[in-house]
Image (cartoon, rainbow, N blue to C red; front, top):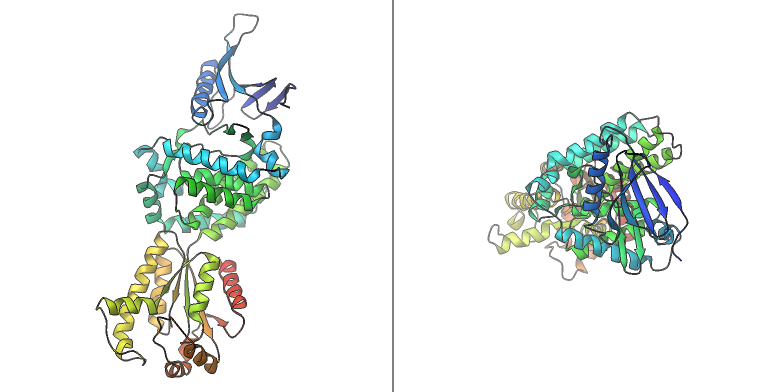
Length: 485
């Protein structure tokens, strides 16, 4: 049954009166740092703009502007007339009650958002919001506004870490942000997709209440727009639904954005909500403190996941470095670049040549090895700039090559991790003899030659004993990567 009982909902800037199957929304005559509803004309203008913008997504819900007349000759007060939807259809209520059909609801919402973005307004002014200076400014502005609440509401050190990691991500991802503009992913979007403002009804989801007070804040990457709802679903305790929704949105939108960008935008939306929570706390809403803390912790968690990683997996032949690299890559969503694969490509292209099977000679002269590592690092730079994480599978015996990799990580503003794989020589040789389909030229004799080289386990590397079960080695490496950011 539809809700018909009369009710009143108040916000800091307005009031909604619910009567029967209608909702009547008015603006308060207030002035804030970003709102001016001080006159009837300004309130009329604001409501007309709200009606216009929200009809892009929900024309069936936004019916028009009416006016209230008093008994005297005063000005008529503008009222936005909307369709009223049952509380049981509210997405947040359905999520919290684990209502049946949630998966289908979210697929439908993802489809509506993707279709909306496909036809949304685009252009140079809108694209400007996705350029590095603008992205950085949005983060900085929100963090600066939250600074006054540090320690009183949220932890100052957490706020500072969010600032550091967001700055790190943005600084190294100019190529990624430029690609998003080139791909026409920047739109005049909704910019306030919350589960509270979405209703799942028989004829499809209804998405209400887009951001209407500042056009510039609606100029967003489509993924950023969708990430707002993903963030809210996670905040409601359903990270599984958040991931499913974003997966479905990206599928419908044909968007192959890297996972790091998803995390980055979820982190941003969590920060925005943390700021709103802080403001609510300042207005006397005591429960808002806990929400602010949770939202800020969510922002930090996703920023840690967003930072691209450059991971060296080294060691001698047969030590399991390739197996570890591939398994770790699958777990953390990274790309593997193997020196063995690059070496084969360079031989095929005629860049290097020589006999295989001996270290420091033939195909493995210092000059040839340096050529291989140059290409490996060049490929790695491209991956990091595009927001990806990369695992470099090689011996990494040369200290100079390791220094070049560290310099690359610094230049790309990526997190750096180094792992050295070890195993008893007999097991390494047995693994080599049992190989099939490998691109490695290593022999048991080469493994023996490497076994005596102390630089195979270098200072600063985390030692991974690959004689242990693979799952243990991968888990240890993954844990080290997560904890260190």
